[in-house]
Image 1: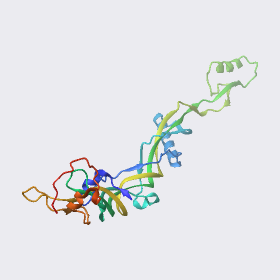
Image 2: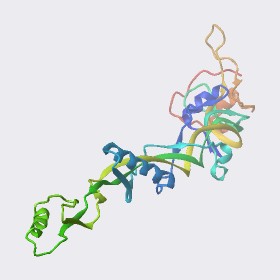
Image 3: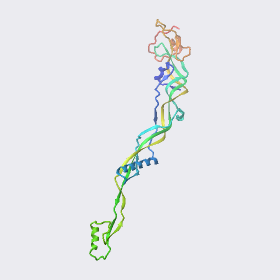
Image 4: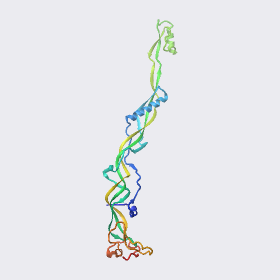
Length: 306
């Protein structure tokens, strides 16, 4: 048997109990960690490196260094629910009532009792079944979370390299003019050119080579979908067949007669259908069995004669 919070007892003098307003809110209970970068994300990183290289010109290239990829553990956004959920997804079918509770059938347990010197008599009210306008429960659902991934681009520049070689004298080596060929090379003259009997001989051809440049850095975002444990605090309403203890309510009153301010006849209240709304029961004390929860407070009051 469950109890409704005492803050709601007064509202039961009407037809329902009002508790917290039903503002839907899902709280993720699991911790989300970033996944490894996907092939799509790796491709996006390489595109970023290409863009960084293009800023310097067509002779530059940027290459993603996958060993430098680091995911920031703090999400850029999320987790945000990407699927749907309902009370049918409640784990183990466990639902907790929320919002407004409307009793199906109200009853009073036992006989009326007094509480101090009040002219009213009280009873413990219970609801046999009812309807909650909202619900709380745990569930597992699909959630999207976006993380930032930083990385390094290895930068290179393609540089043109000249051919290297030397001049040789094609005639008699003892000819004094042969020394001129050596002078050409010593002074860097006529490189790559034949000069009369001094012929150019290629030692290594010219071309291009990639030279390292300073690393550059960038980042991209990646969104992942995970199945996570979450809590719904204001889901859809549901019926219950449980018996719920509401609490203390007035079950017998003696409203004043019009104009005289004297007590009128006893009237049953809040679902009490018994026969104890009488002055005899009220005044009986221990002889009749009526308890008084606050026996030292204002015990002598005016009650109906009958």
